[in-house]
Amino acid sequence: MLDNTLVEPEQAESKQTPPPPRSSGFRFVMFLVFALAACALAFLIYNGITARVRAESTLKQETGQMAIPTVSIVHPKLSDAAEEIVLPGNIQAFTDSPIYARTNGYLKKWYVDIGARVKAGQPLADIETPEIDQQLQQVRADLATAKANLALAQSTATRYQFLLKTDSVSQQETDDKIGDLNAKKAIVDSAEATVRRLEQTQGFQKLYAPFDGVITARNTDIGALIDSGANSPGKELFHEASTGTLRVFVNVPQVYSHAARVGSTADLTFNEFPGRRFRGTLSRTTEAIDPASRTLLTEIEVNNATGELFPGAYTSVHLKLPSKVRALTVPVNTLLFRSEGLRVAVVRNGHAQLVPFTMGRDFGSEVEVVNGLHPADAVIVNPADSLTTGMEVHAASGGAE
Image 1 (cartoon, rainbow, N blue to C red):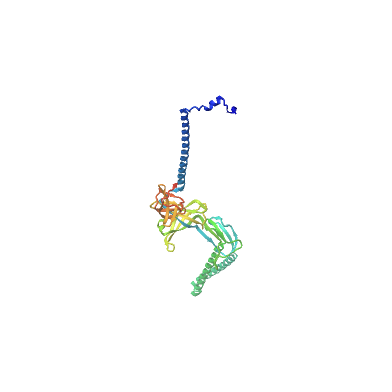
Image 2: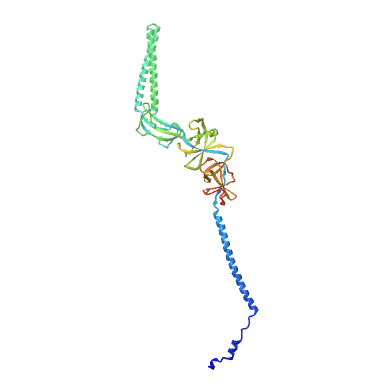
């Protein structure tokens, strides 16, 4: 038992000796470390909060910017000092003629078909006329008989006139012979006229082109019966049109009738020639208003030396009429149809404004502005139906024209 309670002298001394006290420098270092740690933590917390606040502010700003609609704009165009009206026109050949036969018979041969360009006097067809040939032979024989009778009557009358001088014949007999001579002369003249008529009729065996042009129809063929139309309406054999110069007939409304003057120019446009215009000259008018349509019939001549244009075609005629003021035009996709009337949206000081205006003529893709807009106005293209006055908008850069 005594052995367990014994403690070595060195161990007992170490347990009874207290630890030495810490210095003041060590405490300062520890305080500094804790202070720096607290500052770092505070900085991290502040930096995180600031970043979140900045992100929220940026998001709000971007959201606000995105909420502002972006629009494309155009500026009204200033039109020329000459007004232009577009009217429908009908094209016709300058000369258009059906060709009929002037004799009876059968078609022997034709020389031209549709689309053939012919010159004046060029043969078109031959006609066989057996009946006319026989009639001509008969009247020539009758003419020969009449001339023989005339020669006999002439000699008889001469003889009676000589005998009358010696009172060998009476005056009455002489007068009878002279009357018979005159009758024979009339018979010869009639027979000669009949021969000339049949010869001219026989000359119609050949059909000729009456003018330079193009054959637009052939209504006969070899062996067809030809009737000159003496007993029934004749049949048109060919149809020819002169297309070197074309006539365009336009009905000009009464309001523009005095401006449609002879000598003014007009442009023709066709769907088959997009982007092209053919120049014509106003050649004549009826100088009278049609009471049914209240329009002035106007004729425009167009040179068609190339043959690109066809008679019977439809065209849009652009007539330029003088105007004292230059008008504005805007595209049709800038118009807004509201219950209060026609409007266009313009951008002013970054905000949209619905502006009323008065529309003039409709040119299809554009409309004329009579009043309500200025050339410097920025007009919104394809405005949304939800667009209202005062709404903030952003004009797309480069959208103005």
